[in-house]
Image (tube, rainbow, N blue to C red; front, top):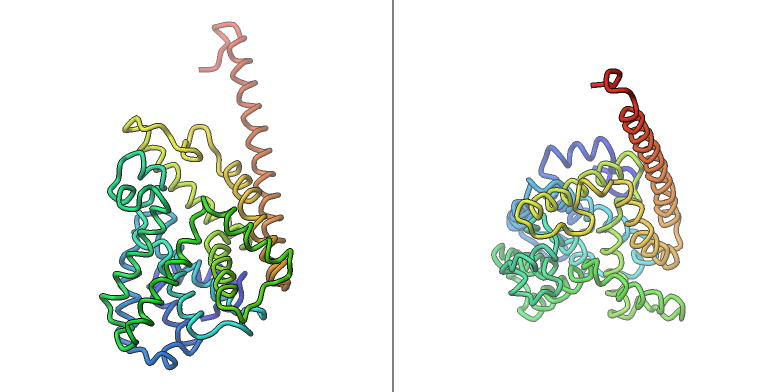
Length: 335
């Protein structure tokens, strides 16, 4: 399985991901590739059981937030860990936590967003006091599987507790509502030039940023793949909107299929979230991959703008046709 090239998880591998045990196969392969099984003396049966439990805790009926998305994020995280600055600095412990966090970052995702959980008084919103509700749930679910699997039962208790806490910090960083908080901190370090990857805290911040990038890297893939992901996430948004309409809850932003379009959603997503994040990541990594990703974002954004113009032109034509039809004498109108 070729997993080192960011832009090549396309047709053949995507088919494998869609048809097979995507998350299990990929993550097991990456654990082996990075030498984590030998380094941490992991029982391979326990590891496979742990990965199967993770995959089964994703909801396959979700169009977007499912095990395939988790596999996509895990593969991207692997690519970022191979970038020279990180590859020369990260420890086996860092790699272990990063891959587990990537694989579990959306564990047991219900297919709706935090505002939906809050306005429906969902027990998770109450449990986590309306703060990073989904991310806290993903983290706690991951901890539950870690303990149940016994994969790291041979490690000292202190190490296991540290693992749970650090995985939590990585997953919590994927809360998109807190992006400016993380991005501002990262940018300030880059502006000052004081990031020291020998410093555990600085290295952990970079890993948080890497996971944030991996989580929203779909627009950085090739158009063929990026467009598929865009359609899937929009389908999930619109499904939530349908539920909100059905129960008179008030439709959340981006979730109304009658007023929103994939193109509008993606252009806004790229402009306000993806481009700022990956611009700073490119400043940090300064590699061919980071420039390629930004290049794909630019091309994909242009493609969505082209589709947006086509849609607007088509709607204008339809409106003009309808108006002209109304002006025709009754007997000549098209039925």
